[in-house]
Amino acid sequence: MNGAKHGFPSCRGTFDWLWSYHPPVEIPGGLVSDDEILCNESIDTKSPASLSIHTFTLNCAGLGPPPAETLMQLFRFGRKDGEPPAVIVANLQEICPLFYAFIPSGISAAVDTAAKDWANVLDDALGKVSGITRYKQVCVECLVGLLLIIWVREESGISTQPESYSNSIMACGFGGASNKGAVACSFMCRGLRLCVIDVHFAAGIGKADIRSENMAKMIETFKFGSHEKRNLFQHDLIIIAGDFNSRLHAACDQPLVCGNEINVSTISESMEKHMDELRAQRSSKQGAWVLLQEAPITFGPTYKFVPGTSDQDPVSSGAWTDRICWWARPSVVKAEPHKYYSNEEVIFSDHRAVLLDLDVWLDGTVEYD
Image (tube, rainbow, N blue to C red; front, side, top):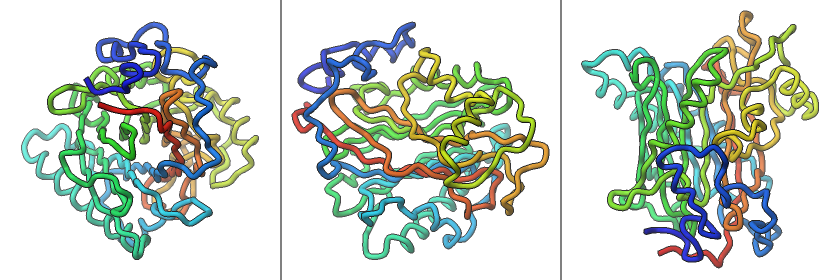
């Protein structure tokens, strides 16, 4: 089996592989970092990061790609030191109309065409931003409206061979039509096993339980590798990005303030007052939600806007539906957000793009078979 030599599949030999079969009532030891025993003081975050990752998520509202010049904003990395990231991950939802999921004939060709169109335009946009820094597209995986794309910097030392990347999908939605779900990719990256996931969970107010079921199904479904199947928690770092469809449980008596770099305390108070769903789930201490980390939100709601404008939809109170979370294996990996922000210039959709620049440090004592 693949796993850290000092314990499979996590330090202290805890049995998080059980999540392959059914989520436990309590979180297995070794998955969360509350226990002081699992804190690894050997990871020095003052030294240069082992890995830098730029991730963004955007719900495209069923539309085709705009010009590459418009999408260049998604590759404006938030690092002040100007160092280009080693890995870039694009997580798109609704790259084509979701009713395609209910048309048996011709769906595959239509989805493939939409995915290729988006992948090509994003590749062009990245090339315009990165200049002399060369990136290679190493993964393109889609499921109806979902599209996951990964680029690695060519001089980063990360493998660009297709066999180094293992993908998995989880389909859900009305009648199992795959209009909702998740796509993921697993790969080795500078000594750590990384998994990136693009999600689009059930839509609608009052559907929190269904979205939790989507999350549980994703954990149970995902398997990676052609021979010896790995589950989701047989990784050192997991990044989950997409349209979680997280809603506000308490009605808003006035529109929420939109935009970027809003006063953090104002945002936090608003999310607390109106009971942001994802925040409540992470605080509930139940299921996989408790494992996820998210950087402080400093931007306004990401949904719902009048396409092509900065105006909120007049019939929507707004919500932070589009998010990026991560899980880092305690005692093995330390991940810290460099910048977490929304983009207010890519406005063709009724959603706003959300971006995360993540720095990762790896305990150099970990070895893999």
